[in-house]
Amino acid sequence: MKKSLIIFSFILFLFPSFCSAQNKDSLWAIYNNKSQADTTRLIALYSLANSYLDNNPYTSIVFAQLELQLAEKTNQPKYKGKALNLIGVLHKNKGLYPSALDYFLKALNIFESIKDNRGRGNCYANIGNVYYEQTQFTKALLYYKKSLKARQDAGDKNRIASSYGDLGNVYSGMADFETALKYHNIALKIRQEMGDKQGEGYCYNNIGVVYKNKADYNNALQNYFKCLDALRQVDDKKGVTYCYNNIGNTYIDLKNYKLALLYCDSSLQTVKPLGDINAERTAYQNLAQVYVKTGKYKEAYEYQTKFKELTDSIFNEENSKQLGDMKTSFEVERAETELNAKADKQEAILLEEEKRQQIIIYASITLLLIVLIFSFFLYKRVKATNKQKQTIEHLFKEVHHRVKNNLQVIASLLNLQKAYINDTKILDIFQDCQNRVYAMATIHEKLYEQHALSNISFNDYIKNLITQLIETYKLKFNVKYNLEVDIDSFDLDTLIPIGLLTNEIISNSLKYAFSETDENPAITFKLLKTPQPNSFTMLIGDNGKGSQVGLDDHHTSFGMELIKILTAQLHGTIKQLPGKGTMYQINFHIPK
Image (spheres, rainbow, N blue to C red):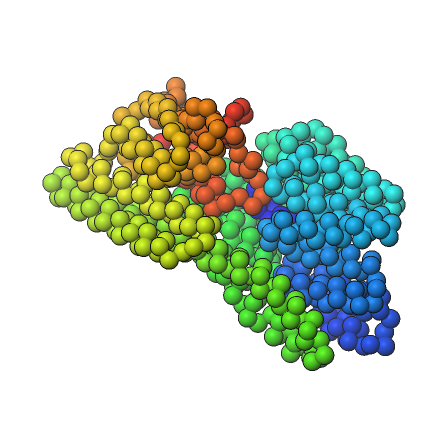
């Protein structure tokens, strides 16, 4: 739900209830008061779980598990279904889709058995969200329509409006923008009839997103500003931060980086006092993107580092402190040890999987950034000392030699570490990192070996890179490659992003595109000049089964984000072409 068109939470925005610390204390006291009715205690637990849903998911799951246990003990199927549904949402938010679906289906069975249409509608919507986030739009559409029907049967006007918004989102994802606008406008009309200013603001935002996807930036901005006005009226500061981000991203597309920076920074300044770590992480990530677009890589690195630090704080601090702090604040009774232990076990499973992958991914990102920055600044420093040709050539050779050696050392260290890893996912991450390192090392090796130190034969480099990648993945069948290059050479500033782009896209093809039964599997690489001076079109892809993940989809991988950053570094644009297989077209310009 939080990702990077910088649509973020608005696309599938929930309408959470916020609790102050005092209210949380009161709710906990209600739950601990055994003289209270069971339903009252269950409502208190459900409210507590919801209050922690966004910022402290591990605490949220504890309260949801307590609710589940109490509902089972007191034979309250409605609240058992609500607890299961909420636990499913927490799994979905962590990207654990199979287990999320399992919880949603269990909850759905309960709500169907007790003929609870509101509960059915919520479960169908959440199942639709799982498929939407995985870009399985046909399945998402099926469950969103079921959700709308159930909510209409329940006469739940608020959630009926949410369902129309969900339908608008999925049609937008399918690029059926007119149908998307139709459903979003129905949702908007319902919110206006209800006098729901906050919901009205969210509808304006979603309409803006559709226009942005259509590249109709004026209409997008008009709706974003309407969203901003509505949310300010109800003092929804968190919503305002997301709206600032969307406005900032639209100005990025318009190449108005001054206004983009203004709104993204406004988002950060607004969110800091709220203590919303996820929203603050998003603001840092967006500012990093603005600085990447403007070529200010030092600032981009600083904000990306802050994003990483906040991400690390979530994974490290929550696990070690949240449950302990909760026990201290609320004075949890010893009689509930068994219930909390079960919740702790579930939390540990969620955390261990994520923490292990996060450590590896962030270590890899940091390593690559260090190498790129080191290479970049060494090259620029040598380039700036353009005084004596012989001295320059000697320095260039020394730089390329040292960078090549350093990259080979890093590749060797990654290879050594792989020998001690059994997890296939982590092995794949290490292999991807090695391939990226080799893509850069090959450039420096070629530059060191020849006399023309600023340029190398582009055709030879790409041919060697593709051949090396095919050999690395050791497929059980032959993969051919079609190569068409319309230029002799590039300088280092252009070669590195092109090499890394080629590595990312072709690696994905070799890992996912083909099977042993495919006929004539092939990789395509074309780089052609365009009529405009210093402008080029690059086509990279395969004739395989096709990718299910789009460039603007939620939950994209690090590799996909790297592709976008490298395209921006080339001052280019990227799009995925229709047809068989997966083919990307990258248009870029090299400034003089």
